[in-house]
Image (tube, rainbow, N blue to C red; front, side, top):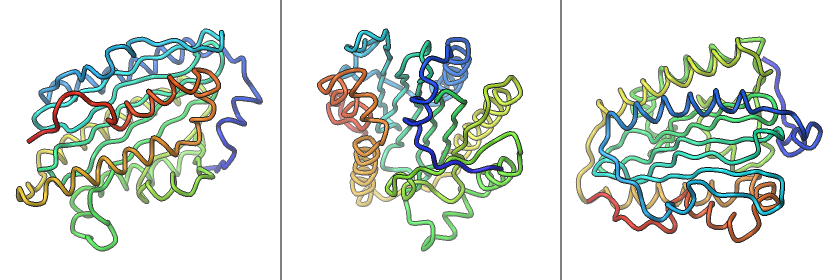
Length: 268
């Protein structure tokens, strides 16, 4: 597998007018399939804080728009199902991220798909413990993800994307999948198969999760929120989003990603 450290902003600037509407429809459809699986497993309630973001529009006259919906529930602290960008002009980014309630010790879920304008896929099980000092936790939840990581890194059609931002790299596990690839039917199928397989494994992880004592749950939930906030606020793509949507709306979108304006209470 080849590697790339070129920022997505540079990739988009080099090819700003690639019409990716068909690919966007495919990717958003895949993310919808994944969301349906999560919704079939968990009781979810839409958080009113993002009702006015379904949809929203850019302020730069480009025609860019987006959709951001958030949910909580008895077993879900915060779930984001969203997309942002301009499918007619190279850039799209979509998320399905799930933070479990504090009672679980199973990892949280992070999925991002998009066009930059090549295909992009990020997938990780976001740990709730330090993996180096909790090897049993690592073995319990990361064996399958590691196998998929290795398999994809042996695929010559894919490129490993290495963020130039140190914090973005620090938040990824060694088993994370972060790749770009040419926009082709073959690579779209790889993306579909990989995301479905790893979501299915994450659901298995939830079922085999240890349950934390009540005294430890609030600490874990606070750690989850802090990590969500830091990732959302430090994302290198925020500068591009702000140019498209303006500072006020971008600030609202960032807060929505981590739950900064949530209305519904966190799980007991």
